[in-house]
Image (cartoon, rainbow, N blue to C red; front, side, top):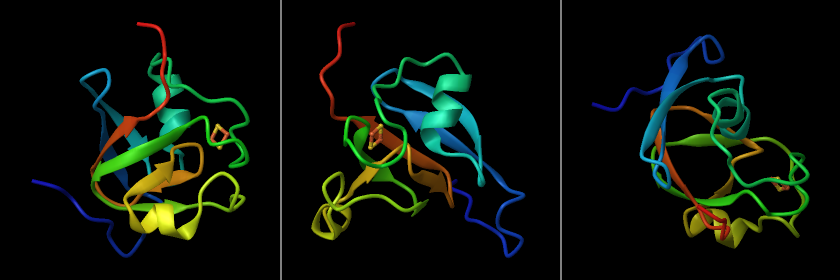
Amino acid sequence: MRREADMTGTSATFQVTIANRGRTIACAADQTILQAAIAAGIAYPFACATGNCATCISKLDDGTVSLLPRTDAALREAQVRAGLTLTCRAQPRSDVTVTWLARVAD
Ligand code: FES
């Protein structure tokens, strides 16, 4: 069952599933999904980590995130509405599942 953020917000920790690797990791509400993935040893594709390059662009398969500031060049509102996110800018607000879209060597 998916958990939702409580009213205290940033004290919560959620489960984040990285579909490309079939792994589920813990991610605090004040942490980005990219930070949690790297801390867990997952080689998540990224470059700038500041919402400018779109290297980390991912499909938000399930759940809700809050997005930190980013450039429109990296992620436009239409893309957000289409279910895409930047994991370097995305903080979980529920348990989530993401799939990165970059091509990486296995
Ligand atoms: S790593 Fe550059 S936008 Fe996320």
